[in-house]
Image (tube, rainbow, N blue to C red):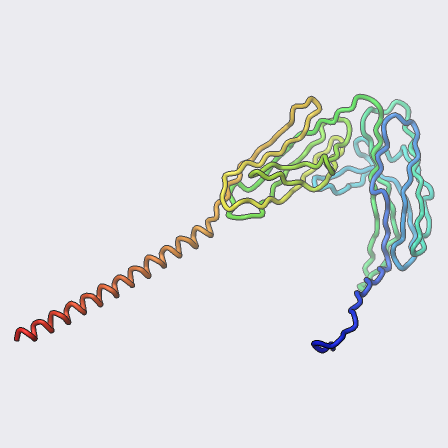
Length: 298
């Protein structure tokens, strides 16, 4: 305990304990540029935990659902898992160490132009927690391989949704973006998708749309107290003509209006009672004065 006015030793921040398991893979994805029949890329796998673990590296074809979740399947459009080899495929990571995994891409003869993709899976055998439940641990890093040919980056807006009437924010705004071209579309960083609404430009979270796929993303908008606002999403098109979608959002504070109406009713009721009491006092005073005057006449 430290008394007021006395010297107290500084309180040292306690370091967070190192978890037993912590694996990091960098980069989080690979993009293989067009024009190379064969190319070599590398991932870095790091053990940031306190315990060693064994890693198995595999390849898998995948699709992506509306939320961006990977779904692994042997039969997917634009599959490229058979184009890639990884080395080493198995290794053990001691705590605090980093290991490189080499990814070699060999594009087959005469493939379809445009994007092909796969995922490199870094698996750690399932361990058990305090409840003796086995937990699978996998990091999936997507790899995009572009085959030379006509590149079409067209994307379309498959939907824009927001509540038509709200009393206050935040207001969820959801859009669906479809890739209609031959390569994936990144909406990240400076190319991040935005919605213009009520004079604000609100960012959607970073996302990627696979070739031939559709993604759904949601953002939150903090509206003014009242407005009839229009939310517009715009996607640049290759020809220079933007694709847009717009929805209307009415913001009106019904709860505040109800509170204001209640206050007005209370004020009117109070005024009525005050006037009634005042009138009663005036009438009583007049009656008393009249009675006094009649007494004088008698």
